[in-house]
Length: 447
Image (tube, rainbow, N blue to C red; front, side):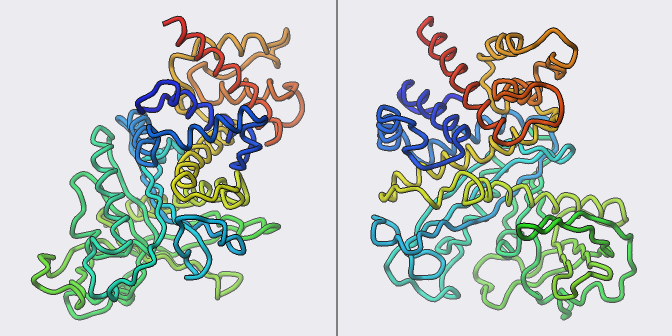
């Protein structure tokens, strides 16, 4: 994935850095660099005038957009905080995190997920920021453009612009994005599914949360609930699903002179868990969407799309303490820290793609490997094949599963017994990345 930045050597170093982050499972620079020369190479990349968060995000997003052409895409956006509690004094240029005390910063990525096979295709964008020290006006007195909430609108607008050649695009977001302007300013050809955070006033005088009280169930649907903590095996929940049209009224805090419409017509899909094991943890989803839901099939499709939010939660887990440990990095300078975080997001997405591929993903190889390296990849695969049928790569050469098989073999997997574990995959990717980097350098020198 060559970076669209001004120096080809820096671009190649960026690709090397993502590979190293994936291979080491860390954002600690001494681990990424492996030796003194490697550490210095990382620092040079982070300090390069050619590199910025925007250049990284734009390059990765452009590549993702190419893989979205003709596909039905679910774009998922969400925010997360990196907090440096007890290590604040060493951080330069960082404002307070979410608790208002410790140094920290925020990330807001958008990822593309295939609506049909649920595979993570890649990053569509990322905003990274820290809060300033200056006092600001009360929230209700500020326009949407002066609030952090603007990130949700920016995510929609940039995604719609990027994915003009996708078959369809639906943006998924959780309760923090329940903003009137998000619906009123929705770009053309981009649908929305947003989990409602507030019991809004309706144009007919009613309230949103009571709108479907008298509506009949369209269907019931079982879903798998992800584990909530270590040792939690997860569970299956049975949901009762209702749907209907609502007209949400412009909030009183938005003046008529704001130019916002008096009301907006949306679909409300309500999913409530039947007989939850713990009533306090029962699932209650009220989803506001621009999709129609006049029958059970349409309502279930909306639930299925919203359920794909879990993929961005995977990205955050892969980025933080459960994965490459961005919150453990020793970098103290905000600007370089943000660049490392952007690279970490790209690496976290690639890690998830490789884990998916281990289970036989049919996503294309080019999701993680540049097309110019395909011949080299196939040669490496042939070198790791044995004489028996079980020792042959069974996957199509253009599939991500083909890459995963090669990485597993390089990591020491013998093709027999249980599937390769995470450590084997990590070790194998380190070897594969080094080989492909050598091939890329040779191709560059030859040209």
